[in-house]
Image (cartoon, rainbow, N blue to C red):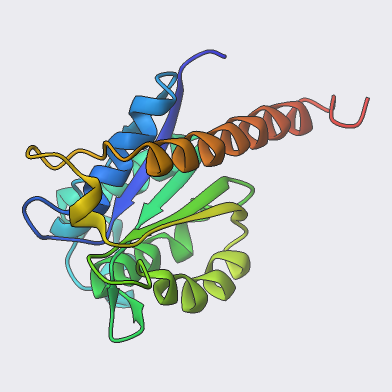
Length: 190
């Protein structure tokens, strides 16, 4: 598989974020996948339709984020769970893509990690209808509970079960990327 560039959306602003580490793990288990834009979600201003309507006033972060989205082969979203929902940073980033069509037909994986037992899975449920509405193709969801016990001193996931689970998800993601390629060239189903 040739290198694939995917948009990363990290909904956590925390230094040492378990969710940012999930995006790095995705690259580690599938070296052909390069995540771009993951640092941009936290720099985006709050979504404002008036600003979106006038490209001349877009902040650089918005312009760069939307360019990454339009060029990306797929999307990886890593979000913590706050109050049984996704982080505001995550939802704000997705809102900036609504008018851009940046998710249409793109294979997408939702991920979350938490120091708690639920692993942040309740963050996924409200995002699924939004992603579907925007045309994203949801491939898989990865949930990591007790994240602190599954990382090393540098904050990287070392727990074999987490690494294996991410490997499975990224395998499905790679298959979906290949299928999307065949579909766009008219070769799917042959």
